[in-house]
Each structure stands twice: as structure tokens, then as C-alpha cells.
Amino acid sequence: MASASASRKTQTSAHQAAAATSEAMQVVEELRRFAEEISGMRAEIAQLKASELATERLPAAGRQLGQITETTEAAANAIMEAVEEMLQADSADSSAYKALVSNKAMAIFEACAFQDVTGQLIKRVSETIFQIESRITRIADRIETTAFPGEMELSARQKREQELLLNGPQAKAEAIAQDEIDALLADFN
Amino acid sequence: MALDCTTPVLIVDDYKTMLRIIRNLLAQIGFADIDEASDGSEALGKMREKKYGLVISDWNMEPMTGIELLREVRSDETLNRTPFIMVTAESKAENVIMAKKAGVSNYIVKPFTADTLKAKIEAVAG
Image (cartoon, rainbow over all chains, first blue to last red; front, side, top):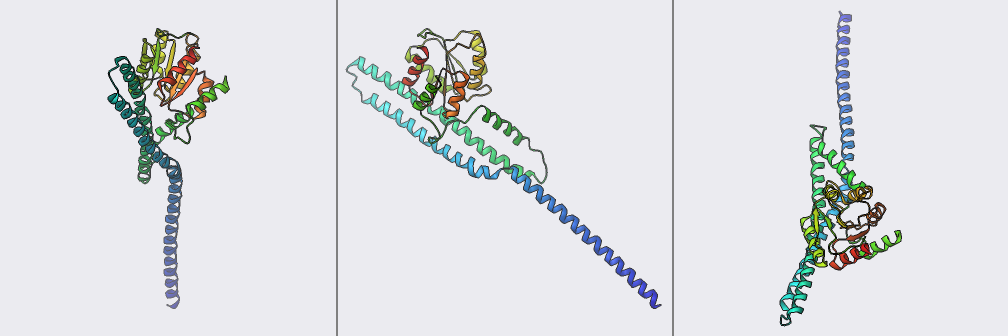
């Protein structure tokens, strides 16, 4: 009797131990999967180059917006000055007046070039916004999906921009003036 | 190549405003035969149909950029002697060097004045 009872107790303990071990293994397996998932997420986040956005693209976008303000302000002032000079000019001498109007009209044409420069700058800022949007979407989609064609398309465009030096209008600190360009060309000659 | 007011000029830019500005400045300088293209591939097509004495091109355009157009022009035996002025907002030294290596005749950075344009055209013509 005592022996049978001891045997049942041993069997029960063995079952309990087996169940506990199985449960522990399940927990270990879940933890392993969890660790793998975290590791995968870290790799994904690293690929998103969040630091590049924070240290390069966003500050550049800020500078580009500042440049847009400066460029449009300079153009508006140049146009207004030209118009003011035309309005204040003495029209008694018709040939001198005609020459002045022609000259000021040219100045207005020159000032209108701001549209090209600001257009390119706005395009750059839009691309940065698109990048932020696509990277945030990628983080959100990470849990559900792995495909993200938009990011791949942008990378191809970035590669082309690098190869063909499509930098867009430069910030004043980076740009070189016409005189310096002339000197550079003269060095080649 | 000698340039005068009858010289056909092709201006290439994807911004209509810029095409208009350059066209007006060229007209003011005295040029009368001026055609326009909105990117390099359209310009190349026009250059193969008509002989131009001067090309004034932007750099940053799609699908064919100004630097790609310049390379195409310089590698084409029938077009490679055409004076080519790059007018662009790309003002890094590396851009100027790349353009020079590709065979650009002169390089103007935007925004520019009519005097600068005139001086560069005269330099190319001289």
C-alpha cells in the first residue's frame, strides 16, 4: 500500500515536473521569438536612418525654407525699386525716359528668376517631407508587412541625384560666386 | 564660331518662367532666332533637326539633365562644336568641374544679370 502510494506520488511529481518543464520551455521559446523580433526591429529602425533625418535632412530643409524667404524678399525689393524709379522718372525727355524704362524692365526680368530658384528649393523640402512620411509609414507597416516599394524608388532617385550632382540651389555658405566660377574655368583653360 | 543677332539659339530649362526670362534677355541683347526646350532629350531632338549656333541650358531637369545633354552633344560629331553655356543654380565647385570636364563653354550661376549673360555669350563668341 505504502509502496503504491509512494509510486503514485512519484508519478504525480514527475508529471508536474514535466508540465513545469514544458511550460518553462514554452516561455523560453516565446522569449527567444521576442528577442528575435526586437533584434529584427532594431535592424529595421537602423535602416530607416532616423539620425540622417535629424542631423542632415531636417536642418537642410530649415535652411532651404530660410533661403526661400530671403530670395523672394530680395526679388520683391528689386521689382519694387525698379517700378518706383520708373514712376518717379521725368518723362519730359522721351528718349532718356524710354531708355530708363527699358533698363528697369530688364531689372524686373532678372529679379523674376527667383521663381526658378525657389521652385527648386521647395521641391527639395517636399522630398524631405516625403522621406519622413515614407519612413514613418515603414515603421507602422513593419508589424504587418515587409514590402515597401516607395522607399526603394526613392533610393534609386537619390542614386541618380548623387551621380549627376543634382544638388539644387546651394546655401550661401556652400555656394561659390560667379567670379569664383570664372576663376575655376580659367584654371582649366 | 562667330555669333551675331541672326545666330539661332536654343534655350533649355524646365521652368517656363526661366525660359521666358532668358528669351527676353536674349531679345534685349539682340538675338532674334530663339527656340526653347524643356529638357535635354527635347533639346537633343531639336538640335538634330536644326543647326544652332548657341545652346544655353539648365542643369537640373528631368528626364535628361543638362550635364547629360552636354555629354550627348560633345559625343555627337555633327553637334560637338556647338557653344554650350550652362545656366544653373548648381553652384558647387564639383558641378563646375564636372561641366568643364564634359566640355562646357561657359557657366553661369543663377540668379544672374543680363550683363553676365551678355559677357558670357561674348566670351564664347570670341
